[in-house]
Length: 120
Image (tube, rainbow, N blue to C red; front, side):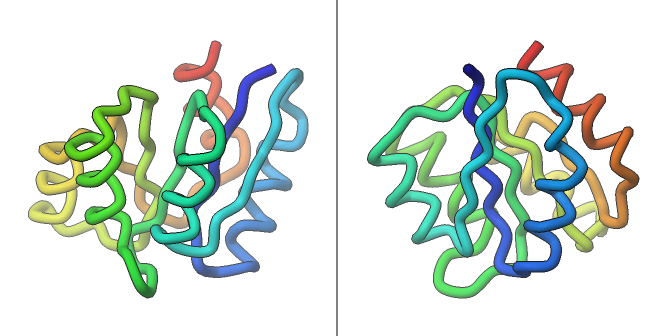
């Protein structure tokens, strides 16, 4: 069973991501409403993939990636899924250790295919 953590402050966007990914076999989806919530969940269980937004309260996506890669030293793939498409944001996200950077909106099949590339 593969575990995916969805980190997104918008309940509507979390719902869309769940709907897009619900057809994946042998996958468990866990939701976090911001970076702090995500860190609490990461400290309790292991995930095979993280999908994170950048714009979130308390701890944003870039800070979350920095903590996951730097302080925690975790290696699971991280996909940034955000509305921020500026070149500097993309470069910053990838330099901090994200494996992929995708701008919203994204259609379901494209997200599903992207996730499958990381979890097999």
